[in-house]
Length: 144
Length: 55
Image 1 (cartoon, rainbow over the protein chains, first blue to last red):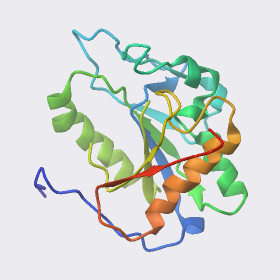
Image 2: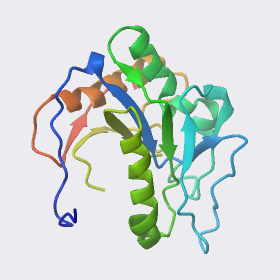
Image 3: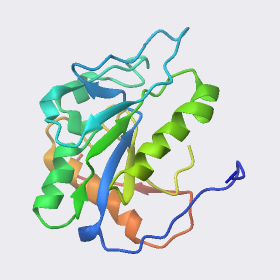
């Protein structure tokens, strides 16, 4: 279905938070340390996304982002990934019974990617397929 | 970017989307406030500014 560019899709939620499974979808440039880093060359840009396994350990994640440091200082999330990718906080909410679950995977991209047309036409549809096929009831969007 | 539900923590630096490194308390507050938006029926597209005193 083609949505108007002005339309903001809105889906009412039909279950309480303690039964809801959340996936993180983030443009903060987070990736596994052993995944290919995002391309920070603005002449090339980067329209790819990474799949982060749901059971990831926070210390196995890092950040690669093309934004200038005064726009987005990646030293902070490199010290504690939860600054932009709150995986430990979500797990704590599940442990406390306040959240139903954390999805089996999470998705990340790099903002400042310079490839908006490709992202709109190719990356986002592929990313949406990943979300729809997952157990997630809703996504938490975070930026850097 | 026009997400259906959004919060804007006031005064947070870039890189501190949920709070400063290891500030578990603020990070949790921001997360809980963001997820609470999900449960509240509302007009889509509003960005709610929120002040987090512990930041």
